[in-house]
Length: 356
Ligand code: ADP
Ligand code: MG
Image (cartoon, rainbow, N blue to C red; front, side):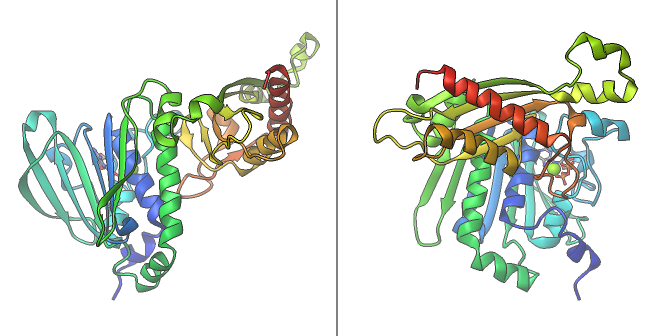
């Protein structure tokens, strides 16, 4: 029979995309400056993420894949000032339950000697072996959902779309992660290994975008640097009337929108790639309403093309909720209406000002 653990592990690992997301975030949390994602058969056979991060210390081997074991959170208050992606300790535990899973890890002080860790379905450490390894961690997820036939079938049926979604997410991480080399490849059973894209240890997001989407981006992109201030109390007259509650919300009423957008009109016949990436405080996320608002403004300047958008919304952590969905991809903005209005106005003004 299936264990409770296998069934409950549906929380963070729901599809190919979530596997890729959790593993890449762990590599970034480990301070990696190089991350290689290797898929086999678009991820159906294998998903492997190799990094050059700090590695896993031996004292953590027993607990690393146990549910709710994390090395990243020391107190509950830390939740509001989180500077790592992970904090729940659920991904590795779920992957043990849902795939054929193992880890190879080495720290700087281990020289070229790494440890290969194998786990029980429960996440309990089964065995440790010695293996040659460079500094860093390689996590291998083979045959995702092999023990859940319905989910496995679903994955096989949708693998093309799943693969596309995973690539889009990887694009977003690669573009936002300044100073981190990304290489993403896929190896089909009877074909050759194909590199989907790669970046360098670039120092700007623009260089990352050019690596991922091609040199033609250099011509089409313009800088996004909008300051949105939606405080109702800009004038001095309301200052005295403010109480604690409004003061607290005031802080969350300023938003910086930073990034790049394709010019509404540029050279005849050139087509901006239809790609859109959104981030809140540098975390990739879905912001369908923000996307819609930007597209509306863009369309009013250029009806025939859609925008390339790379937009990072910098805002107070109290201005949104990330915990509404277990996979942390959907974000609830508290003051969405005001933000969208302000964003549309600022973007319209910016397009008006530029000589497109
Ligand atoms: P979380 O990221 O929420 O802590 P995970 O289940 O994703 O939970 O990972 C559990 C723990 O395993 C992490 O807290 C970290 O200590 C360790 N770990 C996972 N992946 C890596 C990695 N690539 N490099 C170093 N340590 C890792
Ligand atoms: Mg994690």
